[in-house]
Length: 199
Image (cartoon, rainbow, N blue to C red; front, side):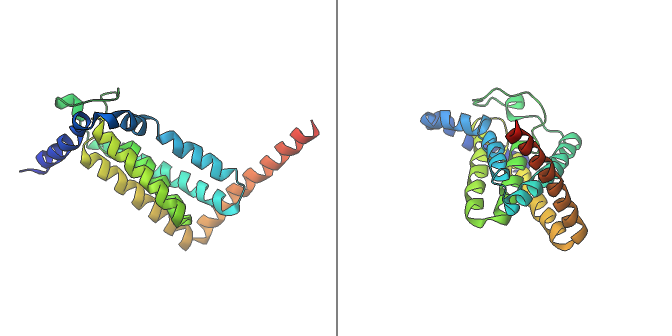
């Protein structure tokens, strides 16, 4: 049995859970199509705690996400793969364009941000990683990704976050540049708040 066949059989087993456990389908739909916004809200909330650690974490996670999604986009262009619902009869629970399936951008984005948070805060990081895994799993359940798409996206996200963190740990120039960007924002932010208070 080839890797492609194994990948499809695993996909089929997970996707068919939607028929066997249909009571979970509403939850899976939310995880697959809406839960990514929890990461957006989380990043914004961390930033506006105004703690230095949190702001560095957010800046680093956004930098990592930019790189990871760029890698994902390049791979998707050169190793194009149709989505499961294009080539197979599947249980498709959410609408989705028939674009590149490999690798999963949702898994890439979720895992790169979750791993970046985990680097700075182990306890809350595990919660974010669990949410990332739930989103990734739901994308298979709802019929829009193969398992290998998800695994590849997760690996890209995790490795990018870890490598970017090593860059900032080992390069004083890179870390200094990041801190300068954060400080520059804080200067602008303080001026905006002063104007609002005076008004």
